[in-house]
Length: 306
View 1 (spheres, rainbow, N blue to C red):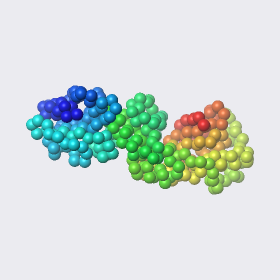
View 2: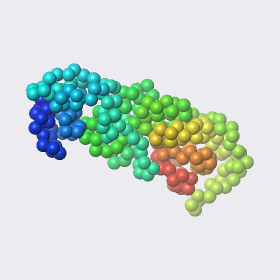
View 3: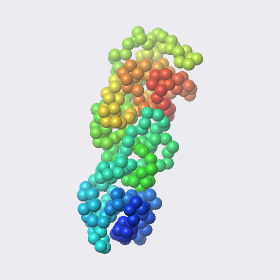
View 4: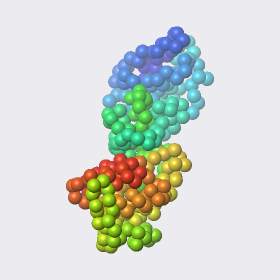
C-alpha cells in the first residue's frame, strides 16, 4: 500500500497544472483497478487497492493540510513532505467519499427510464437501466457503504441508487433519512376501509379496446389485496418527495385487472403515483395491466414471480 501511495505521490508532486496522472503501479499482492483512483484538486489523490479478497482505501497529498481530516486510517510520511493514508473501507471513509465526491453518493432515478433492482453493489456498471442496489432493512448501512466504494472503483461513470424494501411510510422516512434514495413499498393485504364499493362495483371499465367487468366479489378481493398499499402510499410518496427520493409499489398477492384498475384510480386521486409497479399478475396476459398503468399515471410495470 505504501509503495502504491508513493507511486501516486511521485506523480502528484510533479504534476503540471491540469494534467492527469497514470494509475499507480501494483505492490506485491495489492493492485489498484484501472478506474480505482481519483485526483481531488491538484494536491490530493484517493485510491482503492485490492488483493482479490480485501479492499483498502488510501490517499496521498502534497502536504498533510491537503488531506481531508474526516478520513480514518494510518498516516505515514512520504519523501519531500508528502503524506499518505491507508485505511479500511469502513463507514467513516465511505461517508467522507460521499461528502467529497458526488459520483460516489447515490441518487434517485429520474421520472422516465427503467429501474433495475440489483443485490450486488459490484454490478452497478453492468446494467442498462438505472441501477438501484436493494438492501435488507437489517444491513442497509453496510450496503450503502459497499455501493459507495463500488461506485468509486468503477470510476463514478454513472449514477446509481441505494434502496430498501419497507412495510410502511414510517420505515421509508427512517431510511430516507439514513441515505436511501429509493424505497420499495411492500405491504400485506387488508384494510382500506375508505374504499367506496358503490364507486367501483358493479361496473364495467374500458381500457383501450377492452371492457372489464367488476363485480362486488371482484371489489372485495381487490380491497383485500391492495387496501393496505393504498393506506400507506400517500405518506410514502410524501416522504420520498421531501427527501428527493423515489419509491415503487410491490404487490405480493396475485393482482387481477379489476384490482389494478381500482389501485390505479385511487393512487391518482391520492397524488401518489409510484415510480414503478411490481406485481404478480393473475394469468399470463398483461396487456390490460399495461394500458391501465399508461392511463393512470404512466408508470412502468414489472411482473414478478410469486
